[in-house]
Length: 115
Length: 115
Image 1 (cartoon, rainbow over the protein chains, first blue to last red):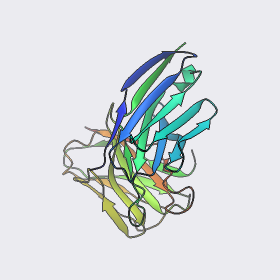
Image 2: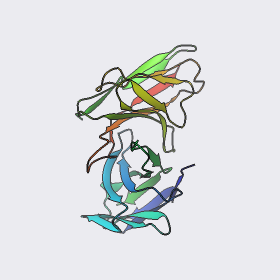
Image 3: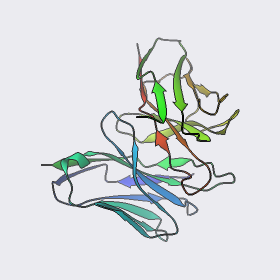
Image 4: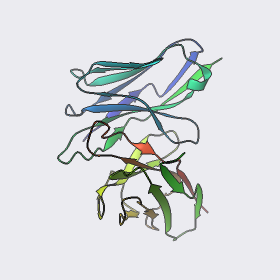
């Protein structure tokens, strides 16, 4: 079945450094890849997404890259700040008849940014 | 916090009791979803619905039931058959057509514990 693997499970960086989180997906038909940020005890919030017709998307300090051939995509956060500390989830969507929009989530990465 | 409202925020279940978690959205979204989140884990899909009076099982539907009598509402019942219900439950919604399709917006969650 569809599967999304996310690495690493925990990541600790110094403030100002970059952080990279990687995900691989199993279904080559997947065509939408969102990233969610979840602060402790709060709801997941979409921070960036990418569709399969582009290879990279950037929004200020965050960027996502997609390699369809290798079936992996990555989240890049530059100039990290303490408020970036949270759990980050990647997800993939496979289009089906009727486009159910089911998200398959990775296991999450706990990012800690040390001041 | 507008858009998707989950209630209650905290819920306690006694042995053998069914409990219902509420999810209401005013975003005019067609699709709604229920996820379960266990500590340190990703989100697992319980049920989803793309249209009123229709819903499908997700990956972990056993011990749960849902209804979709109105577009705005998608309540989740945790039945006594669910032997390990303690978790954080998240409701989400999305549109199913157009450029923003598949983008899911989450409620603030309900934390369910067993007494």
